[in-house]
Image (cartoon, rainbow, N blue to C red):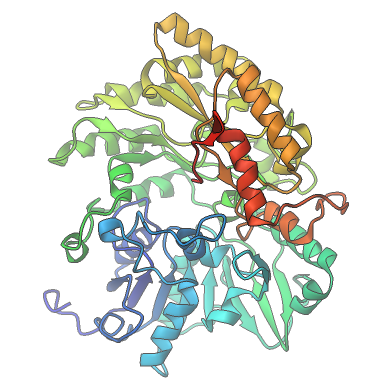
Length: 562
């Protein structure tokens, strides 16, 4: 600030991560976007919560504080699925998990209020805020919690990716105008908004688990900018107001954000404290698109990023690959060319683009791909070929998740896409995520049936044989998901041994994270579709037992929870 001659920042951003100036880090993207708009932006990463030494470092902002828990929900970051404290943190210098507080949003808001009694508004953002914006099940306290605006005492919440909401809200606050009509935000009101969809109250959800399912259904179905209604939820004597989502970025806007002047480095202030592990993965990676319509019930990407794919142009992606040559530590290896689901790049449902996401049918579900969704890997194939041709590129990996059911569904280009992957874009092994093999569990997960996996493995093995490669498939598996019993894990073990000819070496115990249907199942012990009771394993030791059934080898467990 002294060097720039600033007397005051316009906006100060506070994050649960050390500051990495990368397009993969949400708070960095926010800062660069605001900087492009002409605002003076300050950053405080991982402030000391027991003193004023960090939170008062930059003074008060003129317009607002922007508070994020970090790239990962702070409770997910701090605890394993069996609620054991994690000793390591990939977003903290030196890797020791000693900087990110539990429930970071509330802690940081309280820190600001403690030292600035009457200060600028506090605006929440990021995944922790986005997924906790209405009444939600909190696994770590095992109860329903109020919308995060109530517990944190913040003023405004930007949900989802929220790029356009960020710009419009900032301009409204700067101009002194009413911001309550800005799409993509939540706020607290004294009166209800009658024209919005009325959600069950927080108290009704506490009293009746089926009311909580009703709330989540409406919450889930109103996330699309084209088709969504605004939402209104009574909480005690006030109301949570969620305006309809802001519009998604188009291709040119996606490109423009990717062109912002990121250094792709850890800030020098934090670099002296040690390396940040996540930078090893993201520094030379390329995000090709946002969004995912896979709708796995245990995953919150669809709620946070949206269920419509927004792509960058091939030209913009190739320019980013060329720019890597400017870095002295670049060795010609691109760690990842992908997105939430790598092989969703380059195509979308025409009906969805015109009318928004459907409420009554999913794009893909257990053993079914919507007939309107025409899977087409051709543009992705061309992109990968062009990336390989960029000067300086020795190897470009696709490390993001790949939906194998989309490869088998694409009769025209799926085989060619997998051939490109096998030949050029994996290193020794390809990771896929069947998660389970028992049909009733897969249906509750929203995952395809096991025959699809068998068909894919056959195709993969044939291509490796053709290319003379000895590359393997590794499988992500989940234990103790709602509906899963020990007998189901024994069947999963039998299938992996007899059909896949392998012994799994890792599995993860299911974590009920806010913003997911699986968390609703865990809390209510009901199938949200039928409202019928389902088995839910809640005993920690028996959860671990389920995992050990799959990863045991000669009587000993060789797996670990990821």
